[in-house]
Length: 129
Image (cartoon, rainbow, N blue to C red; front, top):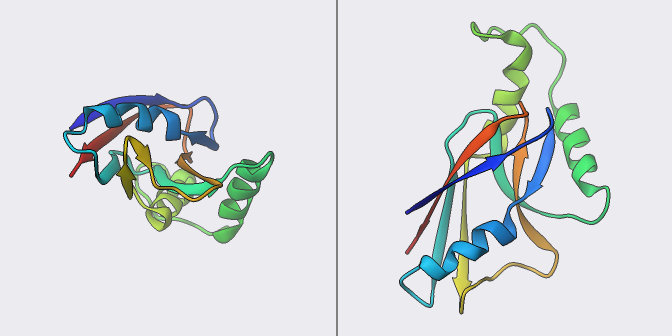
């Protein structure tokens, strides 16, 4: 397993981690298999997306509009409860097949970390099977 740090710069941000993660595929002991990604946090998430210009902002805007304004009961800081809910909806993990040192992603697919409570240092665990 490999652990890397992803630094985010904004409160809400989409970070393309495709090239960073793919660079670690050389450490895999097999030519093809499955890559498992897990982010060890409750206010960011992992998914794939098309990252044409502006689509990162469209994604963030759409996510923020999913949740109603209401009185949240999170004891630590109710104002960032939506960050926890959105990260739960997207999820902290991703499974991606690879072959010959490259991910088998669709033409426009990129692996992204969705930051919902930045800026922060995020811990990403990468493993292969």
